[in-house]
Length: 507
Image (tube, rainbow, N blue to C red):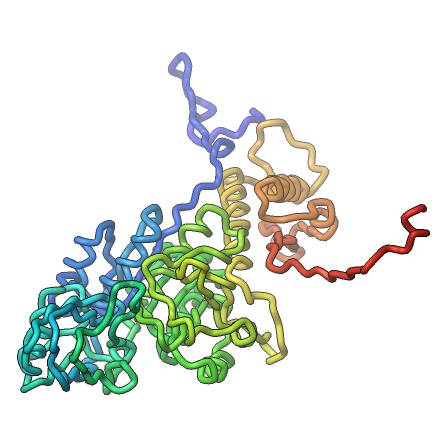
């Protein structure tokens, strides 16, 4: 009996027709790509810390992580840009020994004319209505009441002491120091002007300060298990956080890109600092699985919201096509830096050269991805290397590896292995190196058709499929894909003339 059945035995006697269903030749590559957002929850959140939980609405995010928490606000930005990718939250506890960031708003003169104070906290507008003749203490009380009325804010405001209102983050940790406090972000053209006669003193540098403590990721990462989280938004760039996630998603035997786990995925975050500090920070990292978006100091939006936008846009686009560049995709909902505080092209180029993802602002004032750089800059021997410098490289490789794995495991999960040239009957569950080779080439050709790779003929020449000399039950493959590239620069030499010579025109 040449046909290999899996269930119908040879000696069955009872008539008549028995049909065994085999899906091995029917399946096509289908991979659900989950997003995971990881950051602090606050006391009001009901989720269990260090445990992933599915989330599909803003109301659910606020319920699970607590309204105004970094995690809930990260999800808000993610969900604004991406409602298609299944998303889970990974809530973590604030550092036990940490300190909350604080900052004072001091009203130094009351208004002489009624108006509206446009106060911005972490990029959110707090409208404070004031009346002519309000004392400084009365204005401080109105500021406190206006803040208390917006639960999405990442701060609380204590009862004013005289004309001073103290802001305190809803969690402990150094990320609270990223919260900006400023006035009239949109300026006169946006209808925002401080009421006549009123003056205020904001926290030094327009940011909260003195927050301490960083997350401990050990339990949270361990609880991920082997669930496939393709796109991770993680709003921290301290050394411990980058190291922990780099190890989890890295290429070692214990990493998700390692040969044992084969889960793949990418981690995204954002870091705010001056150009010079970012230029110094960039070379301290070197991971192909992490991308850190460089953000200017004067952007009103905090880094966890930048992270949510980055992850949301990247997850949506790469799920559709992992090989297309992310350049020009916008971060709607995130405030760009003031025009005078934005990185110029020379600075952006330098930041990308030290392993930082970069963004620029569109003509209508919306931040957009300029280059989805990873932090990878050097090979294992410390020499400059660009193998993993772009997110699209690893996203494309992950798609190729999964396609090949799906084809092999679906069609040959219970096959016998024989040498090329073996004479066996049609329908036998036997595979040879040449059959495996043909399967890989066919899958590669389909991937070329789908715009993931190129040069199938050269791929066939470089592909090696052989039976192991020591273990007769093993196939060894040298798989050399030529992944497709992206149009990232259009360089032109404009070699103009004042007039072409008449002789050349005649020719």
